[in-house]
Length: 274
Image 1 (cartoon, rainbow, N blue to C red):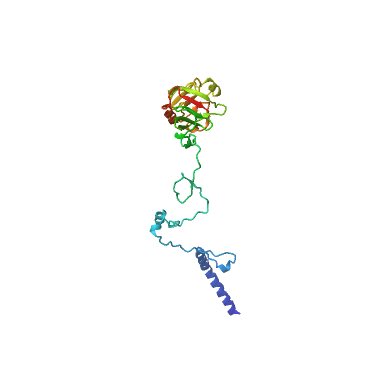
Image 2 (image 1 turned 135 degrees about the horizontal axis):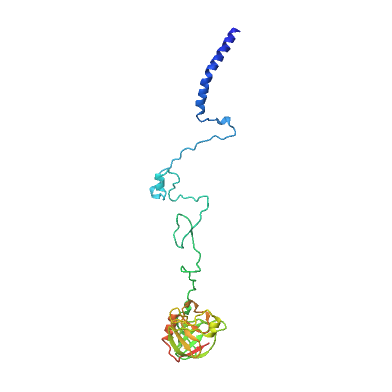
């Protein structure tokens, strides 16, 4: 009995002596990270630190534009040329003119066809080559030197004789303004002035009352007046209107064509309008 008492007393003394040391050891221990064994946490996955990734040296002949960043940075994100991968998020396309090379691998989007020029001017239709001046066969009965205006087909013929004629493209009257008949050239003018008649001003009060001759004048470079009427064969500063029904009854030509015709005909020449 006494032996058991002394044994218990000695154990208690040892326990009271070891508590401060155990507390100190515990304080030192908890300052380090506590690692729980996976078997003690059945519902948690162990945290595994990724192994460091080593990047193999790339062939310098196949290195893209990020090689300098690779040398002076942390080596992350560099890919040799030809290994680009599309990112998960969509990229906005680079808008570049047609025919340009692709930039940074992004798609080049063609521009839509513009309805205006770079200066804001409306884009005009191209001149139809069938209205170019040309020598053609002619089987009509009119003699050489006669002008024949084919209103429906929008051609003017200068008869040459021997079954030939010079043919020019023209613009003619709008619906309701076409006419037919036989006239003569009563006068010729170079770079003529233009005074709109009262009938035209009634329809278009915005027109100027008088315009001096020049490149901006709607009568163009030359005018050949038809009898005592207000009609003329004249040039135009709107060549894209050739081949259309556009005028108030005048026969409209390109400036280069009316200059050519002006030098070939004289006052008194016969004009047949069909």
